[in-house]
Amino acid sequence: MARNQLHYIVEGPSKHDLFVSLGYGTTETQIRVRFGITMDPNRMISGATVHEVRITGLTREDGSGESWLVRGYIRMRPGGQEFECSGCYCIRDRSGYLTLR
Image 1 (cartoon, helix red, strand yellow):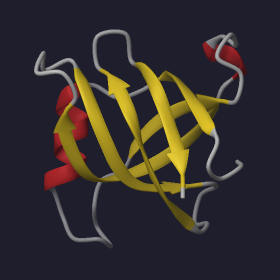
Image 2 (tube, rainbow, N blue to C red; image 1 turned 30 degrees about the vertical axis):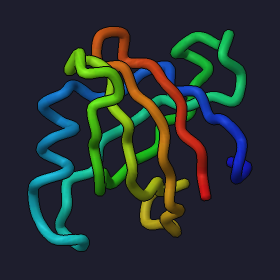
Image 3 (cartoon, rainbow, N blue to C red; image 1 turned 120 degrees about the horizontal axis):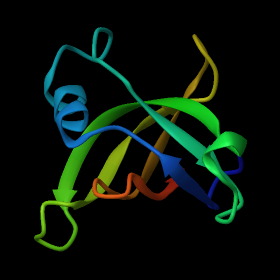
């Protein structure tokens, strides 16, 4: 995944799972959520690659409780290196975007 480019979320976790990831455990034991990510916003879920993300921050994007600004660390493959990421995620349709730093 390229850094400083938009990576489109086409499937993601529930609000409950986001908050559990944010608030449970230490850095080593923290629960990670899974996002289906693609570089092409027109691709369907079946074309997405699933990546685990450790959530470190959530902020309401518009006050609705449905759209969230997300910060965290994405793992490119199981047991692999983590990269800092941030973006916007909509709980209602489980879509959004992430940018790797």
